[in-house]
Length: 241
Image 1 (cartoon, rainbow, N blue to C red):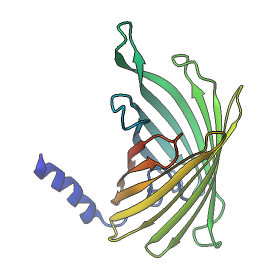
Image 2 (spheres, helix red, strand yellow):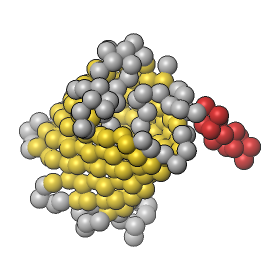
Image 3 (spheres, one colour):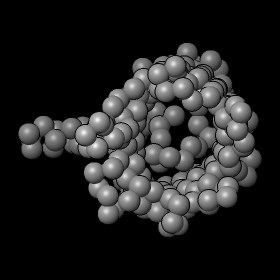
């Protein structure tokens, strides 16, 4: 097992620089799109622990994304997601059930060439179709993505507006900074939160490993406010074809 892990991580070192649309941060997007007629598969795993004192109460989400470069500036994608949530059974014990809960359709458009403006902007729009298995209303999410690359230093800021039908808008932010200590490895720091009656904020580290046609990005954030989860974690792997 140890030899397999060393071989896996060593392959990132051998492969060198990564493709155009790799993710430096697990939560924060950058103004990057796929090259025209290129395809990418991404697999996400999210975990949430609301309270460290109740470590047996947690939730998981898995997402599979297929993204396609329509042009060098426009990408579209289809997501499917499954959630694992706790519930109390008839004997008052905590059990978990996994449901297929969402289909997402996403489009993102890069407004300028990298470095053309002082900051690189991108517009992100997503329609979230909830399945009948969970009974949630559909949602629309819009993101304004801003990023800046200064040699090996990478900065990113996102604002998100999410509207769930028959509900109200929720506004959130994600911001991150990372530095490529080697061409294939980049540690970073993320701050994220939501603006509503129960404001939340979380902060934590991330790390990204990059190869020519593959990347692995993971990170955790710890809650800074009472209403935030004590711990959120995400790992994602992207494969470029």
